[in-house]
Image 1 (cartoon, rainbow, N blue to C red):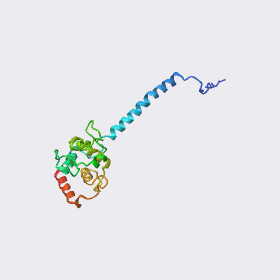
Image 2: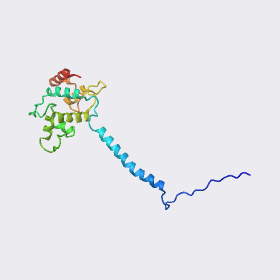
Image 3: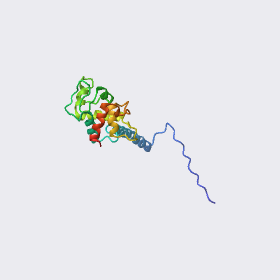
Image 4: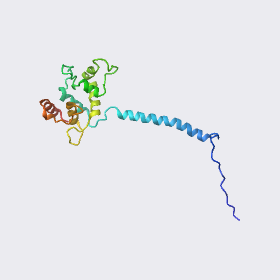
Length: 182
């Protein structure tokens, strides 16, 4: 005669039962790993949302944008027209770019934006942030490249599709762009 073995019946855990050593370890691991994962996700998000996330915005393109705006005149101040520095940055452009400042400056200081716009490297950050915000295909060729960034700087972020050939100043920008074309 063959006896069948019957599996032992195991009662489900009840809420008042003490947690086992294994469940304590699992809880501790979760409490340690979860904050680390959250921290890693936040760091990844910050690192990918700052800086040069605009495709095709190279150092050569920055130099060309500077050349188109002023011939990259590093001694350009802030003349009466309200466009400052080598990139001809206006206060509105600076604000739309997120009020980039020189290190340890105060955005409410009256000349803070002008000082940044006159500094080549700070102005370059303003341009980068502006193009990060408004960058798109302005000429309808299916690409977003330095030509589009030049159109954005001339026409502004909300009207970048306006052809530059329509005005004398726009044609002047086009001629300068052709001089440094990438």
